[in-house]
Structures are given as C-alpha cells and as structure tokens.
Image (cartoon, rainbow over all chains, first blue to last red; front, side, top):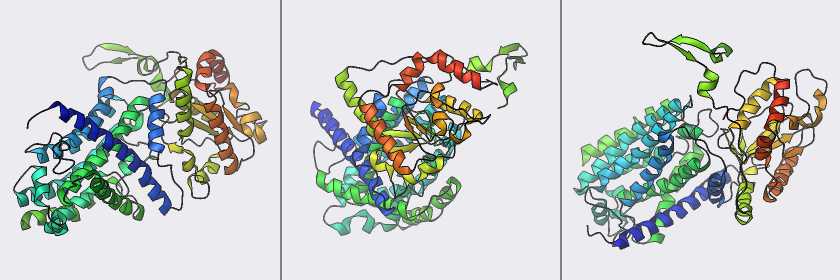
Length: 301
Length: 213
C-alpha cells in the first residue's frame, strides 16, 4: 500500500464521521426501545451531554497504571477495528489502512477491547470486577465460536482473507450478497451479532442495575468518558464489518448509514421482544443453534 | 468482612516472618478531601449546563421514599426525557437522593457512598424526615436534620412527595447548578471537620476510615 499524508487526514475524517454517527445512534436506539415501552425515552443528543459531563468532572482517582490503560486499550480496539477495514467500497481514501489479511486482524480486534478491560478492572481492586469480567469474557468467548466459523466459511467461499475482495465479489445486485449466497454463514454471523452488540437478551454482563455491572464498575469521570467514546465507535465499526461481509458493503456514506441502521435495528428488535438471558443460559444458547449453523456453513461450502 | 478484620494486628507471612498490618491504613486513603475551584466562568457556564442536563442518580433507596422514585422510570412520568438516568455505582453518579428517613445504620452507608462520588456531586433530600425528622421526630434511631451530616442542595417536602414534586425538585436542582450554586462537594471539603464531628456524634461504633474514597 502506498502511504500518503492524505491517508491520515481521511482516517481522522472517517473517525469523526463514525463517532458522531455512533453517538446519534446511541441516542436514537434507546429512544426506539423506549417507544416500545410507551415512554418518550432519552433525548437523541443525550450521549453528547453525558460525555461532556463526564469529562467535566473535577476530581478523579486512580488505581494504578493498568487502570489508566484499560479504557485506552478499549478505545484503541474500537479505532483499530475501524481503521483496518474498508469503510467505503471503491473509495481510494475511505479504504483507510485495509490490507490483504485484514479479516484475520479484525477478528482479533473484536476480542482486544474486552481483554484490555479485564486488565484494567482487575487493577481497580473492586471485589466484584472479577465476576463481571469473567461473565463478560465467557459470553464473548461463546459468541466468537459461531462468528469465527461463519467468517471462515465466507473466507473459503470467496477464497480470500481481504475484506475489500469479499465486498467486490458481492457487487451487482442484492442476490449477490453473502446473506443470500451463503445463508448458513449469514445466520451464524447475525445470531452472534446479537450477543456482541450488548443489548437484551445478552446484556446481563452490562446490566446497569446489577450489583457488579461488570468491568466498568470503578470507572468514572474522564475514564468513563473514554469508554463512552468507544461505545459509540465500536458498534459502528462492527456494523460496518457485518455490512461488508454480508450485505455487499457501501459505495457511499448515505448507503452506509441506511444499511448499518437497519442491521443495528435487528438487535434492537430482538432486544425489546425477548427478556434477558443469564450468562450460563446465553453461553448455552450460543453453543446451540448458532454453532450448528456455523458448522453447517463450513460443511456446505 | 467483620469488624475484627479491620483491627491492627500481627500476622505470620508465608516466609515465617511476623508482619504488622493495619487494614484501615493499608487499604484506604484517609487524606482530606480537596476543594476543586471552578474554572474560567465562560467555560464553567457551559460545563454547568452539561452537568445540569445529565443528572445520574445513585440507585440507593435509603428509606420509604425510594418507592416514589420507581414511577419516575416508567411511562407515566418518564424522567429520562429530562436527562435523568439511574446509575448503579457511586463512582459514576452525580446526584444522591436521600429518600426519606435515615436510620443511624444507613447513615454510615450513605456517608461512605457519598464520599465515593466524584466532585461535583449533588444531594436531594426527599420528604419531611430529612428536614426535621418528620413523623420520626422522637425516634431514638433516626437522624433529624440531614444537612448536619451532608451538604444538601434541594429539599423536597412532603410525606411522601409525589413523583410530580420530585420532578419539580429536579428542575430546581438544574436551575441551581446552572447558576453555579451546586457546590456541595466543595462545601463538604471546606467544612470537613464540622461534618465529621457531627457524624461521629451520631455513629457510635465508627469502624471505617475518616475519609474513604
């Protein structure tokens, strides 16, 4: 890849657009969920105010170096996932830093943030953080299995580990999308996607009214602000990944917004319709039907 | 953890060497809270607006008034549309609602939770019990005036105040914060000795560090 200064500018521009899109999504999606419950819900710009407020806290305390690095790991996981993916197909600049083996790296980055969080929360000394982290990690591990099987199936189908090539192979009409040409891999991916978005029924690991809310229990002020920034960037990066793998990618920003919005809506629909799983139930669920779909996808390809 | 675990004692290390441990000093910081001055007025005004529009309430029901806060989350009153959200941990919250009478036993937990919240933090006192003791005015086991123990920003009178009154109280708190009057945390730091003396007068078995953040 020829590296130019322009790439950095466009990388930052991508980050800026995705951050704002993510924050607006973070405001709109709870609003949609609230309307299902016949509430008005939060204002769509509430996530912006929350971030400003958290950074405006005057005091913060620290528990050591790993405590600082936890949010940094998490944020770099989100930004890394975004930067190594072709965001806009065919654009010489919004391809950012994607390269020949980016699919493998992207799979790795999915796990990166959670691990950083585990390190940081461990240092906070909170007695419940170990419970929170192990619950979160066990769920992520379970949902990675169908995800990885689906991704390997897609990689075998197109004979490449480069996301840009996978997108290119899906051009030329809706029936060329992977979700139609390889439905079992698509099903495995979309079911594991439900878990990775952290919404009901898989949000017990982050449930706000649980005693251990998981890793972020001790994080506050600016630390929490950084985590919130990542909570805006990371879901959109994941949405773009799923759009690239299953729904033919996007050739312009408006197309990206529309497609990712509807992919996100899938997890919101499931979230408002089903009650929460306990962690052991969700692990068992991921190792059931989604895993089966993943194995079928591998066998059929 | 029992009370005896907090006492100073000598234990044997795995190497066979006796070492002295003092949990209250080893595990907690007993430094006094600091006063955090506001920044330049023009920035402070903007930041105060953000603070007032994003009130994170600590989900800690101390008395019978906690039952009046639940309707605020449901469709009928829906406080979320005013930027009020409930958080489970004191670290992340900015508003502490003392919901009704406060027994001596609960006061201890309230002080610990309050001190773990980060500056700026606000306290809303709910119900008559927090103003003058209310119907518990002659009880041996509840406190009478909350602002002897914690700096209170807004009182909401009533026994119990209805959810509408609580929403009105939130609006009042927002107004105070926007005017730059929500400086309870700094007040607590400035008059720290007075507040501590009052708290220790009530809590007889003081088995925690003086300031635990």
